[in-house]
Length: 212
Image (cartoon, rainbow, N blue to C red; front, side):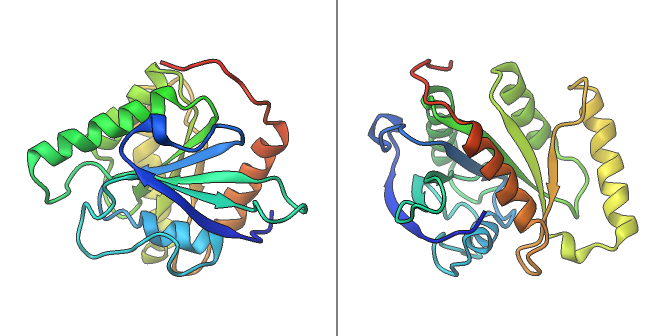
């Protein structure tokens, strides 16, 4: 898939105010400071589409971006940048608000094709990530893992990280979820993620069935 256009649509905290679910949608989420904004910008090849910040908890809204809406060469889709979770240095009330926004969005949007859960590959499996993916599995919401910041690891380190996650996930899931190894710095994994999105786009059939 080629990215011909990527445009901001709307930010809000109310899933009911999200754009009409008339095209496939892909949500990106992860713990604060996992490199989500940098990866999104790399995917669409725009340095300023998603706002990056050294301050954890910067993303506090449901951010919709319209991808390939201005071309007939590719099917249009929505990319959604969700608030981070976990170690954001924000008040407890704000963290609880984030959780409510995320849950409401994920369980009501009928056009979500995949929730990409971003994970910093440099650190051991974190319980908060495992708990989040467990909830997605329990709610039968489609997701895939995206390992980030992999340019900082050698091949041996990558394999050790994968082995650690395979072991941790084996206690939760019968099979290891689909995953991608990426780097916002080198662009590694970009084509793999976009090709997967394109595959889902081609198979997409609009639905009015409500999850949750």
